[in-house]
Length: 253
Image (cartoon, rainbow, N blue to C red; front, side, top):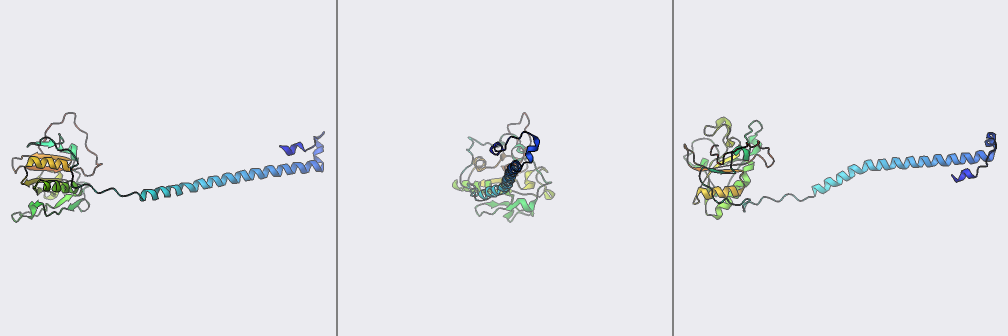
């Protein structure tokens, strides 16, 4: 340091007791101590400002995220998939078991109050609305995940001049006398459909184009020919692992 050059070189240790030498040494010590304090204070301020900057930046990020425009509503008037070349009876898309496409039933976590919605459309015929219908089931009740593909199917079918008929929808597990215990009808995630003025093969194509996760053109022995269509619980719902060899057609529900 420069101030040290001003200190006369003492010949003996006792020379530091001289007044001039002592004043210069004290002055240098004070300057050094002041510099250290200023440095420590600057460091503390820098650390404190960094700590406060994090929440502020996080808040700004959250505000930007909140300002993002909402997702556009789903397109209910155009197909979401290409139509298959053909859809014969006793075949399904995708190939394989329904559980691999729409997932298994999960009644343990199923909450009818939160997951079921009532579907109303004057263009649709509902089995439960007919006078000859004697049971207490309501074919207007479906799982909320069914609503979008079903609305899209109604619109696409209207362009073909057809009228959709809902034969079966939600069936409560404790009052299910028709379907298997593992049927997705017990969660409202499956609907059985027929149609007026449009063949079932064409209806099956439209159902697949409408976004149903599983479409089966079914010819059961004990009931009339119809389509069985189902969906996943949600787009990100886990599905069971596929078997190494899956059958090309799986007509069972």
